[in-house]
Length: 237
Image (spheres, rainbow, N blue to C red):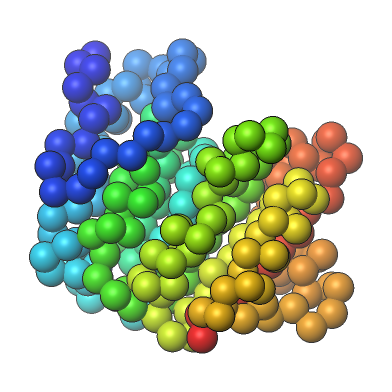
């Protein structure tokens, strides 16, 4: 396996440090093969995004464009794509084992409305024109429990500024977490940001999963550990 394969070749965008592992053992030969031969067919072209916009990433024009930050094993991204064929979906994940799992689903089910960015989602934000997205998902982000690592959390002022820029007015930003401190952190940051409105009106609106929700593997792990999740919807004003 060529190690250079995992480094996106794009000099237009600054390289940011991705904290945590991006590759571990355990992939099958088939998954390695998918990373080498199939990923290029569905890989997001950052230059096209920058020059022509999100619509140019897909073979035909879609009704809406969604993005998932850190899709993990890809089950949520794949399911959304299957259920919403008229939506173009961008999935970002630096963890190559997770990318391989999503590629397996895309190939087996012949899903045509996903574009994969196998690196930092912030590179996509940097290239994306204003008001491009109708919906954005951030499901079970790394909580970085230690106080000295809180600055690594994806919810921060810099990223929220970019998120606000790329979301259309009225677009939804959906965040789910099973870590109480991260839930509080998220609510504090989003409620203090004039670009967003928290849509919850009662406890059931954010303590119960939305209708039709199917648990991700990370949520299932949290439930086995006795942790409850919060489901937070924010609207771009």
